[in-house]
Length: 500
Ligand code: ADP
Image (cartoon, rainbow, N blue to C red; front, side, top):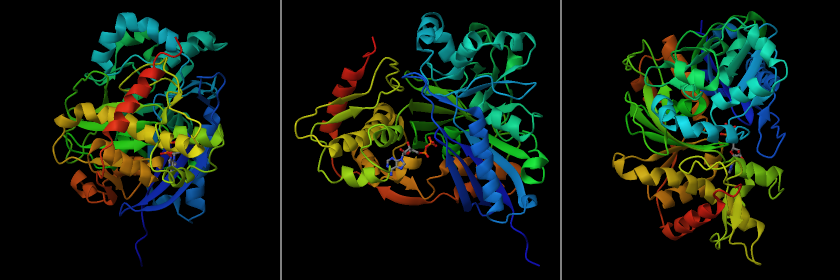
């Protein structure tokens, strides 16, 4: 009799869609389901999601992957979860119901509060958490919820309020309220987690007025997160790996060595560089926990692995904005054809500071700017400028550290917008470095599935996983883009502090 295939179910809960991938024992992506969900903008710089919609779209894609492919759930050895980070769901532990919409990482509602605490705590927060004080991270969002949601004080006094990162919210739902866990990579984005000690920090909890019982328990990224309730997939399945989306992509791109780096062009744009087991701090960059892996061959299990991170808030999202708000394109994939229909940007620059600017500027009062428009400017120039802006932003992050990187290093690119060849070539030109797109643009969902596979013993070492990585296309630098890049820097200057 033929041996039945075994699988890992990988849940990838992103900012704009929920995805589920089914990965087999040979690391092959067998099938994928994806569902977009609603972006809620109650005020110009506020961003929310409906937590129930996050859960329902995630469950729907997971259920479809199984039912539409006649997979026997008993052959699914484990569940892996990767997720949009920093976004917070406040819910009542007694009823399991959210008390407010999820406040999304892009949301700027706590800008004023963050400016106030910056005066006193900037230095200790950087030393303890590796983060810059910014509305991006979870702690100020939790504070806002505590101060603004009707009835929340009663839930606090009855010890019923919980603040879940998206992974912990999905774990809570999947286990029917039995587990409320997160991993160190997600916890390191809350601004309440001491990355040197790998635990929540009492002083920071006090600064933000949060109590530890409100938060998910932190365990290793390949820990035992509980079992999915039988009612969902007909059998209990263990949840065996959890990683924040950017860290999962770093793992999925097999950036296991110190100095290895990847760039994800998703809703936001993210550079992550593997730092090994030492937390190195660098001005304007974040230091974060990449993963904390125990009892796995090839990982010491003593300390977490750290990463240097440059986060930009709007990358592919600018293309979505051109599509949904301006109606300049019907589909994201059209952008490339239109961009290459002209030979240059003809002096038009777009700074996508729609929610302020993240690394390396950290300017929450910056606002979106289109500059250099003339009577001859067409929609093609705006679209090209938008695509170019995604590459300029990553250049802002890599150029300052380029000479510290190993000489033979190349940029491993992934994320939805990495499909765009114009963007990849423009990036290689700007950096004068080779850029490779992985054969799997789904590095995020694959990365966490690889970790679950290690934890389940399907694969025995990172060397075995390394063999799964194949380049799809290599983009070598062709021309110099120094002049364009200098103009971009000028355009950025004009976008800074606009709100003030
Ligand atoms: P996330 O996981 O953050 O939700 P994805 O990695 O799925 O995001 O990437 C989606 C983003 O990529 C969207 O913002 C979309 O506008 C952009 N995108 C998708 N295809 C293209 C393309 N061909 N060219 C440029 N941008 C694209």
